[in-house]
Length: 178
Length: 178
DNA sequence: CTCATTGCAAATGGTTTGCATTGGG
DNA sequence: CCCAATGCAAACCATTTGCAATGAG
Image (tube, rainbow over all chains, first blue to last red; front, side, top):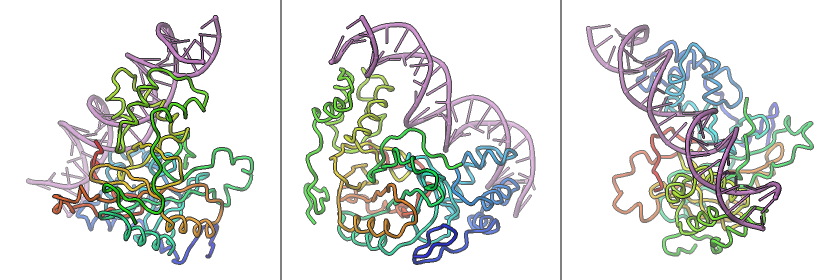
């Protein structure tokens, strides 16, 4: 295991995240027209480091309509340039996709999302695929942690963090990412 | 591996799901009052075999207010008597909880949810816990499949089923459970 | 030029809340 | 009796849609 700038990197170094141009290219590849709102969106997204909600983006780009934000985010997810992740409470967050198979490590404190790839996970999936009746068509795996930065000065904050792994306990408002 | 009535059972036979009385008891344990609406709800829930949405329940119990349904479902989830699962598209579903650590095998065709426990999963979690920076506070794991029954007569339906495992591709309406 | 894309506003769908009323313990 | 729990309706919030106007190719 290697740790870089507090980020967990396992086995495979995470490739550079897409640039503004990569996002635009992803849209072009899908036969979409490149408009100003879409350029603005791409710029906004690549500027972000952590996970973000659609609302976050819409708020930052008040020149751009809500509908356009949602429509474009969807396009980018379909194009594989963005990941849609789920917070413990079920609310969706987006993050730039490195275009490889990976999973997410979500900090419940700050909402930061790191991507990782770990042989133990792939091994597990292979084993399950063999044992499951019927065709395995997909999976969802998120690991929730309290990252190093968020653990500091939060000693007393272990309150409800006993998130169990099955579905979710129904907690009130989630740790908002922004 | 053992298969019972088409259900996948791995390693640990799944304990009997809670009865109506178990649900009531779960509420009592939490210091809740046992009212008629709650009895009705408990009865309705134990009658169900597959996963259900809050809306499903509300629809069946038109004597009971929506608010009460949502409030009570939340109580039961908190009490650990119900699981809240997430469909591939992000929409929540409930299912009776066997009160043990387990994960979910969700059929994207019919919405049926089976619980399972598999050493490969636990092994994977242990490995990840060791490698992750910071405290691992929880996880979310759902495996999506097309169950035996749903595969039959759906040969041509392999269209978009390439659900990838990271977050979700943004597909339109989900395969509704009911 | 033409059709995809946009912004707006209204519609939606699922969930929560305020509040006066009801009923369990 | 009293306070938890209810039902209703309104409030909410994120997301989607209809539609006329706009602008990319």
